[in-house]
Each structure stands twice: as C-alpha cells, then as structure tokens.
Image (cartoon, one colour):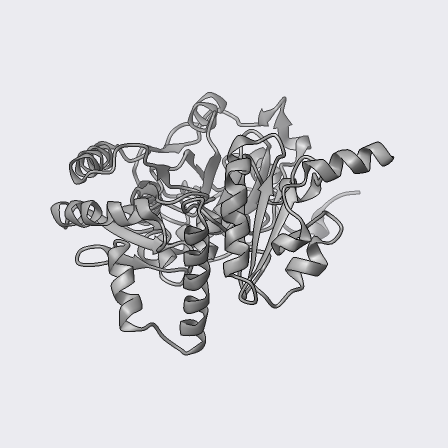
Length: 435
C-alpha cells in the first residue's frame, strides 16, 4: 500500500503550491461540478511527453488565473472513471468547465501555452458577461466576423439551425468553429470566398460551437474547425464530414461535386406490395421501410389513389438521401401484414415505419399529407414515437407474410352488379307448408 502511494506521488506533475488542484474520481463532483467558478481541467498521463512539456506553461497559467479561474489536473492512468465519462482519447486533453452548465464542458483546442489558456478564459468570462448583459458588443461582433461570419456566410445558432439547415430544400456547407481557434481564423477569408462563389447553389453557414453547444453535441463536434455537408432534406442524424483542404478553390470544388450528386440522384420508387419478393427487394438492407396502406379502390377511385401516391412520392423524394424503402398496399389486400402491424378498423390511409433488421415498427398518428408524413418520419429519426414488435404470428420465417396479388391497373373499379333474383316460382306462404 505504501509502495502504491509512493508511485502515485512521483507520477503527479503538480503540487498544491503550484495552485493546481489534484482531482480524482471521488472529489471531482464536489470541487468542479458543484462549483460556481470556471475550471480548467487537464487530463494527463505521467508517461506522456507532451504532458511533460505542458507542465511549466500550465503552472504559469495557474498563477496568472489565480482568483479568476480554478485549475485542476487528473492523472488518467489512476483515475479511470472521469476519462471514460468525458471520452478522453489522448493526452493531454484540456477541458473548460464554464460558469453555466458544467455537464457540458468545452474542449480546449488552442496552443498549449499559458497565454493560450488565459486567452480562452478571458473570452469565456467576456462572453458570459455579454450574455448576462443582454447582447453582444460591437467588438464582439467584429470578432465573430473574423471567425467567418460575414457577407454570404449565414450565422447559425442552436435556435435557427434546424429551421435553416435540417429538412431544407438547399444544400449546406457548415463550419463549426471556436472564436479563439487559430485555424478557424485562417479559414475565415477562404470560407467567405467559397460562399460568394457558390451563392444560389450551396449555402455556407458558420456556428460558434462554444456558444451553441446543443447543436455541437448533437453532431459530436470535438475539434475546430469541423466542416460538414448537409444535403437537402437532411435530418439530425445526417451530415457528411468534409476531409478536404481549406482553400476556397478546394471548398468550391467539393461543393460543386456534392451539388451534382444531389441533382443527379434519382427519386426512390414507391413500390406496390404485390408479392413477398418485391417487398423484400425494396426493403432489404434499408434503415427503415415505409408502408402506406391506401383505401380500397372501391372507396377511393383512380384519381383519389393517384393523389395519395403523389403525396408518398413527394415525401420519398424529400428523404431520398436516407436509406428508406417505400411500399404501398391496398387496404385488405394483405391481411397478415395489417395484423402484423396491428392495424385495426380505424380507417385508411395508414403509414407504418418498420426496421427490416429488427422487425420493429411505429405507426403514424397524424394527417396523411406531405408535411404530416415528413413530421412523422422526422420524429422517428429523433427516436420518438411508440415502437412495437411486429406480431410474430403473422410472419413467414423472419419476414412478413405476403400473398401474391394482381398489381393495380391504374383504372377505376366498380362493384359488380348483382342481377335481380326471380322469386315468382317460390311459394313464400309458410302456412301452406306441410309437416
């Protein structure tokens, strides 16, 4: 036990006289998370060369920030729970726990110098004061422009991101940046040039990830700048990472290439489910298969049915970048499929989203319209809605039990006329019947 204590002591880079608090799995919550101070926390490993190089600068930062912010360190080779909780993948990693919600720390990605650390704390304090004062100063606005928000570049926030980018009819290039990030500042003029060149084709936006952390967390932003491409109709689970160069010409070339992909991409086919093979081919290897049960042709003739199919096609086109299969069936034509999805007699049309791999489904509750179905599918991708297992009694092996039917010929149909029955030769007087 004494040896363990000794080894732990010699591995520690800092002492209390350095003004750096030794944090552990046991004291972290009480000292950091429940504190009303800003905390700078370094996760390190004693064997790490970069960590050793940081020591004099970190000590200097602690002295400069004394009384302003608290400085702590965590030996990640001894304290295992905290590095795991905060997803630490390399040493050293520095996180800033601000004055707001300390469950959402900011990754420090600046230079490993005392000046760099002090600068980010100054900006954190300034930002907090401006927010509490109800607005930004002119100097702050200039700083934002230096970070890439100007001219043709759209300023994105937690509150407008979903409305402007997600489910948009436009393609977007989005930069997630930090005001103190040197690489972001270097990118700014190139980003603006690319935005001007692609105006009317692809929109360029920039989001300050230190100020708008909800969207940043949603897309797993861990370094700056991070650039993502969003195709039209993208949802919260979309967004393609851009790995290319950071010159305007490279950004323009990439944007034009992605735009061409969007223009040339075909709308998915909405298939009539008339056989097990056709439905399996449509749904296999898809994230979701969307089933639409349309009214019987006797209740909804050709014009009515085509209007509903047009709605499905528009929704399918909107989600063409998603791995969805699209199937429509006539009400009553596939009784086992309806029972598998627990579809009652509440009326048609009915829309069901099923995971082919998990055989789980959820049913739309809402209007059969482009907006109504889009809202339903977006809620599914967000993990909302009641999810149920497909009823196994109505499966054939590991797939839906589908009988082969005749495809719709695109025409109206009428119920067959029943000829009048001649009852003249039938004696209906029961009193004359013999026992």
